Length: 222
Image 1: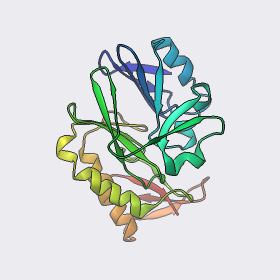
Image 2 (image 1 turned 45 degrees about the vertical axis):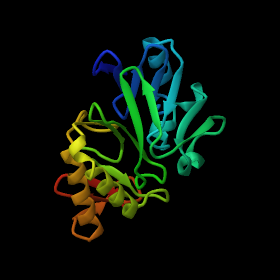
Image 3 (image 1 turned 45 degrees about the horizontal axis):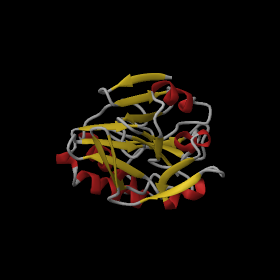
Image 4 (image 1 turned 30 degrees about the vertical axis):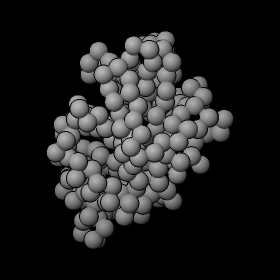
């Protein structure tokens, strides 16, 4: 796993398929997502800090919640709780909750669509948004399966777009990182074109979905 530091407190944990983010303060640490079960995030975190770690989930897909077992507990939006592995102690995330660690203050932003309980974490002072899978450069953004909802996704992108003037940097879980706030509008415009039936598509060779190619963003969707 590659570990890169944004500053003396924020670490990007990149295992090639997905990323997690670690903030280390003076007395505790915050971990956003845990990657796959085989990603070794727990061991990587313990190699960086011995402080108590609170786990926050952007959402509960297996590539974000798979490593939860060794941490034992997490904070997540309740609509995603059924997706979280058994044996993990669950604590609710709610819109507007704030988590402080070191120089960071992460505010919870509810952005359902990619999953029913997708969340972003926003540090207003730093203009930093940790977006999970909901904002990406290029994609593909997974939008097929029973827990996805394109109408909610579009509404959430519009919600983030209304905040875009306050966002300077976005840390997505997949593909290039960091990216700029312009990708919120780009993802939104392509999602609107998909919804309107304007995007070309072809069957995915492995997944039960089609690949829709927008001007900036690819989507995996029914």
